[in-house]
Structures are given as C-alpha cells and as structure tokens.
Length: 327
Image (tube, helix red, strand yellow):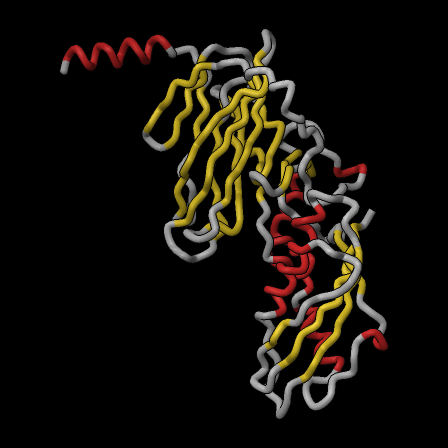
C-alpha cells in the first residue's frame, strides 16, 4: 500500500505544472458520458483542443441543464457546437441569453449556450447550458479551447483525473476529401458571424433559431387562400390554417435540419392529408418542388400527429407551403 501511495504521489508531482481542465457536475438530474479530446493545433505558441462530451438525463423529463467548465490559466474558449447539428456563433452576453430563452420558449428547439462566469488565478470559469436533456434526448457538446503550449493536459471529470498527452494531429490522407464548410443552421447575417472568444461581454450560442429582435432565418410562406382546397363537411379552411400555423415551428425545424447541409434548398411542399371523423389525420403522398425526401418524411410525421375536432365525415386537405432561407 505504501509503495502504491508513493507511485501515485510521484505521478501527481510529474504533472504538477500541467494545465488542468475541469468539467463540473451537471445540474438537472443529468450526467456526463463519453468524454473525449482531440488536438486540432499543436504549435510552439499555442495548443487548440476540442473537448467533446455528452449530456444524458437520468429520467424521461426534459430539462435545462447547466455545468461549469474551469479552463486552464491563459486558456480561452473559441468555439461551441452541438455535435453533428449546429456550429455556434458569438453574441453579446445579454443577447445570447435572450436568444437561448426565446428559442426554448417559442420553438422548443435544442439550443446550447456557453458564457463567462468568473476569473480566478487558476483560469476562467465558464457555464455551459443545454436544452432539452433527458434519458431519451441526450445532447453532445463540442467546446474548442485555445491554451498555452503544453505536453500534457489534465482533464478532471467528477472525481477522476486523466493525464492526456498533447499530440499533434496526424496529417489528413490525400485521398480523403476535406469538408471545410462549417455545418450551420443557416447563413448568418454579417453582424452574427463567429467572433472573438467567450468573455465577460461575449457568449457563444449554438442551435438557436432566432431571438426577440432577430426573426428565424427560415421562412414558411403561407399560400393564397385559393391555393388551399375548400374542405367539405369537416373543419373549415380557417381552422385548418390555424392548426398549420400552430405547428409552424416543427415544420420549420424539418426544413432547417436539411437546409443546414444544403443552403440552396428551397421550394414548395404540397401537404396532402385527410382529417378523419375522429379528428386524427391520414397522410397522403406529398407533392411540390421541394423534393428532399427527408424533409417530406419529417413533415409527414408531424402532420400525422395533428388532431382536429371530431366531425361527421372525412375531410381531404391540400395545403402548399413554400420554404426558403432568409438571406
């Protein structure tokens, strides 16, 4: 036992001067899973590391989860992303908070916010917030951190400390095409381009679809009344339009998940469905110029969940919607 303690003490002493990155315990009945690091840049003057971890809820309740990130001295967070979904961008701290809350409240989407909390002699303390996190809806965060040069990075997660050797990334294989275009929700306006680092006045936000002073970047253009077939014997045209309007956020989300990969994606989806006497819907094959199968499938899934008031007979509905990115 004494020999083991001596070995542990020597190991700790060997890394005494190594930069330390601490991931705090998340709030909201959540836990951290699948922590990973990858070094993007290793130079004489700086090291850039991408920290990836997954937030998973302990039950089925969707919660707004927060945790602290304690950066090494001299380090700063320069990037945020929801892994595989959206790159982050910089906003003022106040605007980022408003946009985060607005996105949750109005679009029930999955934003992520990284903001500065305080500065200590050991380094800056940041707070990461993410929504929604549950057992069935985990979120994977990617935080890019720039720090002074080092040979070892100490990563603290819970009660466990791991010494990670700082190794330069291997050069890419020449036969593998490089994907250099950032994966974003939609083209951002000039004043919302990624900028600077997380600090007392600047935060990073990802996954947001707009804020109080910033309309969503995807438009759904309502059809002219004549374009919607007049129903017979069931809900009237205004009632159907009201139900469609109520679900606009979900329809917008179906489109945005594909538009983030193809910024030229736009067109008309002609929704065709029947409203059955019990108020549920039966979806027919869609038509229109927006031929993306994943967008159509997602919209069809949403329409199939809609409910209307009961009536005496079925009602056939044809409802065209135009989707476009706001430039």
